[in-house]
Image (cartoon, rainbow, N blue to C red; front, side):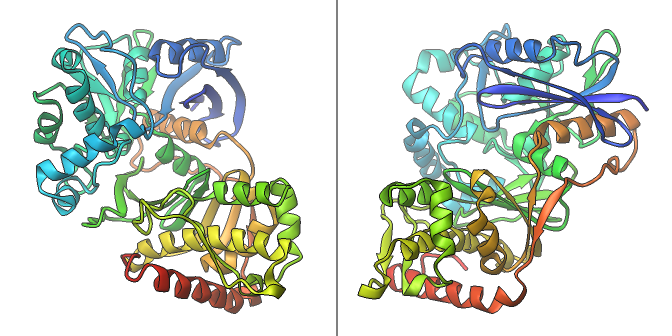
Amino acid sequence: MGIVAGLDSSAEYTSIVVCDAETGAVVRHGHAAHPGERDDPQSWLLSLGEAASGGQLADVQAIGVSAQQQGLIALDASGATVGPALLGNDPRMQTAAADLVDALGGREAWAQAVGTVPQGGHPVAKLRWLAREHPESARRVAEVMQPHDWLVWQLLGRPEQRVTDRGDASGTGYWSAATESYRTDLVELALGHPVRLPQVAGPAQPAGYTPEGLLISAGTGQTMAAAFGLGVGPGDAVISLGATGSVCAVHHTALTDPTGTITSFADATGMHLPVVRTLNATRVLRGTADMLGTDLEGLSELALTSTPGSSGLVLLPYLEGEQTPQLPHTAGSLHGLRRESMKPEFLARAAVEGMLCGLADALEVLRVRGVPVRRVFLLGRAAELQIVRAAAPALLDAQVVVPEPADYAAIGAARQAAWALSGSGYPPQWPAAACQVFEAGEERAVGQAVRQQYATVREEMYPGALPV
């Protein structure tokens, strides 16, 4: 069937992988940093051009696009940008998000409407902020896109029809994963007037063709593309260990959560990706390592000399407040201090156990809602640490797999391109990601005891805070 390409435009760079459409084998790849400001869409195009400059896209028959999620590109009636792109979880937008929650009648109303409660990262909150802080610019806005939508539009030569996909649309705050439709009234609630929105294409549906006949698939957001590239399916969850943490799992239906703890995303295949986030993940390990005068590897080595349970020490890792449970104004706390436990190795282990127990709480939110989790993909810098790999299976109560490093979002975009090119009702069966596998084994009971120790302290400090 030929070769296909996937490009992933992150906050800082563009990655391109070119794959055999039938086998998924990587033929070649390219990489380039964004040369300008991260909120300048033209910089993303320049980066894309540089990444492809070595002939990376020669003979390619289809391209899929992945890009950073929940960015907002506001365009005027001529298609020109109205100011810089608004990207990421921008703290300036939190007040606007809270305004929107009140304007619709509370968190439950939002959860019922679109499966999510507005946060600072959602485009709907960014529209509200734009209307409040820059009303003249807001009045010029005629249409809105997200980064992957805009890149697809550019690759197609800026056609009349704009296209997005259900995965990226589900992160806007004005598209419902349950009904698979826009809530245009919520756009008007945020901005004050209607705007043009991209058409939502199906998982295998092309966004269009270039004049040269090159197929461009619908594309998707980075989370959805990475899940597709990893080959996750029902029974799988993905835990991303950045400074913050996220837990998502493949599920057959959208979940409505009136507390707002679960965000109901759609995926790139027709399934759903409910997500639960924590505000504290690798930052807990880095902070503890700094306190102990070491680095992440040193922290891991110290913790490995301890025993499970950290001699009774329990760290509630809410260093930046917390989202799961919803404790935005709290702080981290250390419990169970005794003379015999006041040693570096016990504090190091307590930090690791606290981080993983916090993520296990997020995982439990999904399990209680009927999402089966038998295998957990662990991603991020902290997943490379020996102590995390050793402790995670028992504390998360699942088989843990750590994928080998690869551009999984770009691979997922390429897989989507191959699917659209084939015209098949099913995605191409590319090999699953190469992974190291870790099992709990006899440590499962020990992990349950550590989880119970952690849960007891959490409940004493914050009774009823976790919605399970």
